[in-house]
Amino acid sequence: MQVPFVDLKTQYRTLQAEMDAAIGAVLKDAAFVGGPHVKRFEESFAAYVGVPHCVGVGNGTDAIQMALEALGIGAGDEVVTAANTFIATAEGISRAGATPVLVDCELDYYHLDPARLEDAITPRTRAVVPVHLYGQAADMDPILEIAGRHGLAVVEDAAQAHGAAYRGRRIGTLGRCACFSFYPGKNLGAYGDAGAVATGDADLAAKVRMLGDHGSRRKYEHEFAGINSRLDGLQAAVLDVKLHHLDAWNERRRQVALRYEAGLKDVVGVPKVRPDTTPVFHLYVVRVPGRERVMEALRAAGIGVGIHYPIPLPWQPAYRHLGLDPKDFPACAAMKDEILSLPMHGDLTDEQVDFVIAQLREAVR
Ligand SMILES: *Cc1c(COP(=O)(O)O)cnc(C)c1O
Image (tube, rainbow, N blue to C red):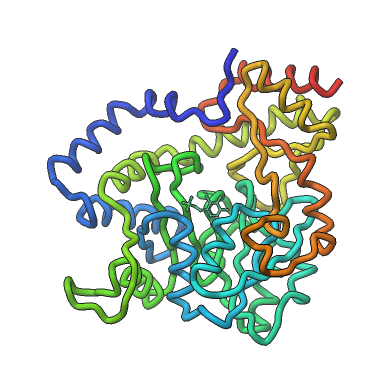
């Protein structure tokens, strides 16, 4: 049996008729950049998240950079984020011209540890970027409280958490704005790169839109030098089709997580779900001692596995210039050599999940 880590081929087969029609419509309209398909998806996604504004952009990394720039954050400013995240979070901060300030994670959920947040704040701090890593909500209430007390903007990195919720509130509605990625493997994925900024702030949305469209509101009238980072019509049409299936896929991910938990909790460290939150399990990350050997055994059995992420940011050559001491990140250090991501997506069958459980139990024996 083969169990792919993500299975976009099976997903396409289940959507083929709907998808081919949607793509055909864009081709017929020749509405490739901007246009009605982009507008429709932006409106549907804003409604899904529960905010008035959604601006489609080129990818999730740009979304973070542009959101910070639109907030007026840049050179000389500091932005606090989690030490264990995909590098894109920190890149968005650096590319905006600001300095990423990294905070260690909490070991239960692997999110930015609110208990360590206040120590990272200086007179130069302008924003906090909590990451809803692995499809679970970061601990937003204490983060929002601390940020509010210091006058900092909260920009959610929601790239792994489309549809997740925190204490009854949808991810994407909690901060000044939220940045989404629609990279193909995300819970809501395009057929190429795409991203969005969702916000309740009309001025901020307008600023992000101008930034991504050469600093212009009207064609050939440029108020400032922006960049080119827009959602294209084909990706918008693909995303609009998939958005209708997102809740069902997320529900299937939760069922798979329950099945993994029941089958594995006595042999590996299984993920905890933060109380009063709705997870969407972008990734299902277990902790196993002797990970390399276990990983090899699973791969040999035809099971796709991964590590998210093998090198936390304080250990990355790209951020050596920050002069960080890995000793200041004990939680990252404790998890980085044990985490292992199992296959997780909306098309997994019970048979595939049971096969992964059996093979993993065998490998750790
Ligand atoms: C995927 C991802 C991003 C960046 O998204 P891209 O669309 O690939 O640029 C940002 N943050 C996190 C946590 C991600 O997983």
